[in-house]
Amino acid sequence: MHSRNNRLDRLRADQTELGNHVIDEFVAGHISRRGFLRAGALVGISVPVLSGVLAACGSSSAPNSTSSSGAGARNATIKCGIVTPASAINPVTVADQGGLDMLGQTGEYLCLSDQNLMLKPVLATSWTSNSTSDVWTFKIRQGVKFHNGAPLTADDVVYTYKLQTNPSGKGAALSAFGGVLTPDGVQKVDDSTVAFHLNAPNGNFPYLTSSDNYNMIILPNNYDPTKWESTFVGTGPFKFKSYTQKSGASFVRNEEYWGTKAIPAGTEFTFYDTDTPAILALTSGSLDVLGQFSVSGGEQLLAGGYNVIKLKSSAHRELSMRNDQAPFNDARVRQAIALSLDRPAIVTALFKGDADLGNDSPFAPVYPSTNTSVSQRSLDVAKAKSLLAAAGHPTGLSATLTGEIFQEIPQYAQIIQQSAKAIGVNLKLNIEAQPKYYGNYLFGTSDWLDATMSLVDYGHRGVPNVFLTAPLQTTNSKSGTGAWNAAHFKNADYDRLANQYVATADLSSQRNIAGQIETLLLDQTPVIYGYFYNFLTASAKNVTGAYPTAVGHIFLNNCSKS
Image 1 (cartoon, rainbow, N blue to C red):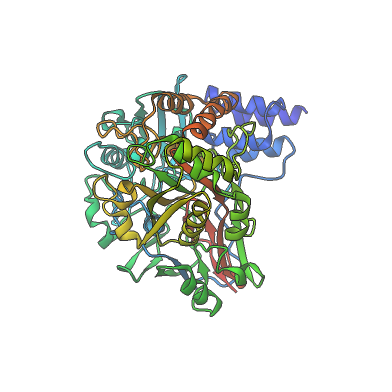
Image 2 (image 1 turned 90 degrees about the horizontal axis):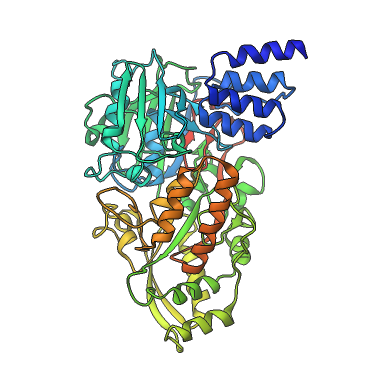
């Protein structure tokens, strides 16, 4: 016991008061190992200290790491298939999975949100908050160089965050930063320290600086992001070799990387518009890794003979109904559509069970703060018809459902169409290629945001903040809130509750507020959340070390082939 206490004292020596409180709570048995890892990552306790505390307290498992000794042949070229980027690879405007995959190949974030929803230091070595969680201070890693040879400094971080939080810049990251952080709040403390002065307390802010907020790779000071596609400049373990729109990209190992050097000599990416040719490429041996695949069409991969990684996630599809346009300006119509869906059957049909039921709020089962006491919405055709009649549609109604060609979404749209037909609602399907569907990602220019009924993909996030704000809070172009509010939902009570949740750090309080939000959204039903699906990645049997995250990244720096 004396030896353990001495070791813990040494580990506490360099921690903040908040970090030491987290350690003390774990040692006392007041929080679980998972709770300790999550809380420690949030307040910026370093990975070595987290590991040391676990070891001192008898836990043999360290936090999950993306690093690897890389058994098998080194210096191979790893061939990977991903979905085609929907538009130009610009760190400010990218909002699709193919684009974020490309950003993450050479660019790096302040921290990584890993497969267990824990934060790991990358270009930031630590982070701390003040007592009210409205100022967060990040220490920036030293000895890092961009691929152009320039050293990483606090100035680069400040420039990147001022660029991304500019409310007139129309950047995709405003979906996370709207109402949270403005350019004036990004302040250089010294050459290795940046402080973020937030608009309001935010207990989960470090997640907004992580790979969860996939636009936030750090750019060189004064760099023009519109030129990124021609340079892919970053600080990561791979450097740019070539990029061909709609076709693919290739990268080579960065021999001057600040961390552990990549195992592969290079990587080659091939882009695919749909799953089927990508799956065929893997099964034929043309690919080593498939960044993501759907259960539908991927049965051969799931049957055996491949390395399949399944990650529980908050990834989902949002069926938004325009609250400001007939017929969906009546909540009873929106509720009727939601009640027409047989969610367990949908999960079975589309995912063979590799998904969780959604309850028409963004609180996925994977989140510790989800309030599971709120009753699950289920199929009720009789009630749905009654609601339609009460809303003035006793003989039904017609509408158009606009969606995107991406993974299982076309099949899900057909299920929604058939389900609605059972309650007298005739839906015409308009399923578009992603470039047309997303448009310019802005209201008035995007079928996604402008359609009367819109079905879109949302990638995983480690905390629900973005899901609570971007698609559901009242749209305000000045503050940047509601940037992805395709439902055009406007509810003051919801806005207040979402802000309360974001400001709260205590899990019990978060869960209480979550219950209120879940209940309100079931009543209003601006968006239908039918399921939260597992993220699936596959590689050939002789390929190891691929590291996906549920938000959609695929990191190949530790890949090897035998």
